[in-house]
Image: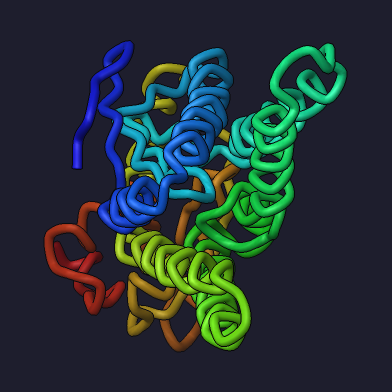
Length: 289
């Protein structure tokens, strides 16, 4: 649900987060809600500021209690090096806020001061967990994508996020028998699973947009580092694109049974064929088109 538009960025609140905030408010914990929302907004805008400095434009941010999911327009954020810097900006900003208020004069209301410190510490530590959609997961994906490709890395780390969501959900149910705080874990577990699943659903779209970006860069720079892959005519384009790496432009050399070269396809050509014909299209069809 969209709640505001700040500096050209749509700020949305996940419905689960809104439900949790309403429950907290009903229980007389309004200040806790205000401090959590404020901390999450600062955490997310730290990502946004660093992203803008690196040339990444954010279209919208959807807020969860553990942080948020930013949707970028340019998809330059899928560059591994940039993604690491942008991902780390959030937890580091939360740690900075916790440190800042830790050294504040004690004349300030110590109850809310300690609460603010604890919220930001929890936000930072939780986001360092290496699963998507958390910031630690984005760092891990960036590291893995250099060796196994963005698509495979996203699937692996998003699956880890769903597993973490299930663990939190089950742990929350167990703790709910003893503490109210267990209910928090149940809700966070559900939201983490949902957000990780969204990463998987948006995977193909994000992946294709990133590869299309290379075509634009090639036109602008006039050159790109390349990587060659040898393929048979019966290989699926989907499987070939699984081998694509963010830092290289891929060229596919197609050979016949006698190892003779029968064609060369660029990464951009494969993308166009996959967009037009679907993921089951084979290399032979691309050569004949």
